[in-house]
Length: 232
Image 1 (cartoon, rainbow, N blue to C red):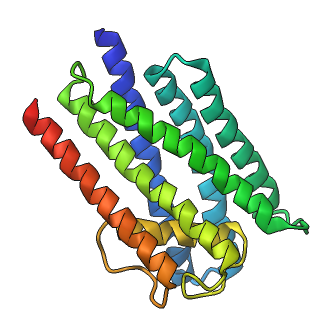
Image 2: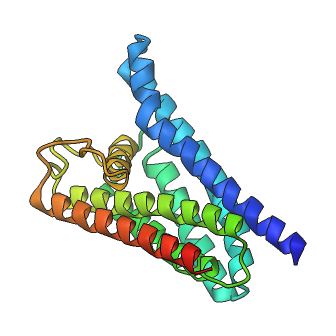
């Protein structure tokens, strides 16, 4: 039992650390490189490449974590399959080093987000079930909550990007149907999750309303977690 707890705690920590570095990259890398007088194209490519690297580690961490949560092969295979499909398609149609003219590119990007959304929702669901189990220790519960909390930003970042696929000006600037625009969507989601002033102004009414839902859900999750910890 102790060995299993250590494995679960290690899995939670691993995913959280990867997510933190991914968010730092999304929010800071490009702008820091621009301040250093590196060209915008090179700065963008470096930020995108790092994002793909972190995503690779994230997939490994997610697999390690979710296989502890459930022994149901259908759930496990669905999560891994959706994530791998999304990652492979994204690596081709949004490769920062290889530009490929893809007909109907927005539908490929939509497929990526649908796959990621299905996988992320399943992970959040099973993670919450695990977090609220009686036998889970406080430290495991805290790291698990941090993991789920950050996943909210990923989930809504994908939703914002889906809106931008059909309304390119939804975030207040032209969406380019590329990885850089997706990183902008995640950055906006992180600012909403952190309860800061929205990162972008002049967003569409739909984006603003979805942001309200994200903020409410994030606060509700925190309230539930605090209540669970106090009830222990």
